[in-house]
Length: 83
Figure 1: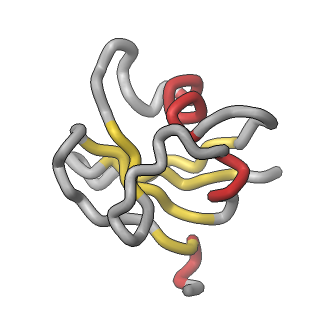
Figure 2: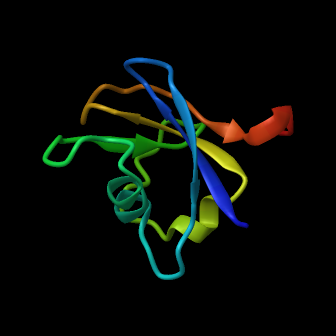
Figure 3: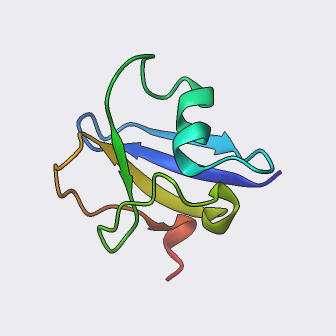
């Protein structure tokens, strides 16, 4: 199964989420229940780049940081310590 690990930038909680074909990163977070419905958020990669609207399948096997928009949290990277 292809998954992305999301890290909540506020609580440091992690959740592995299956990636569905054709979904954006934002849609994957929303459909997972990782963030409560109606909450505003952004998703960043290991370099701090916002990846909300990018295809989720680009990030399979990685950890992405989910936080408040504009929080400038850098997070994520390869799962399992690989670079």
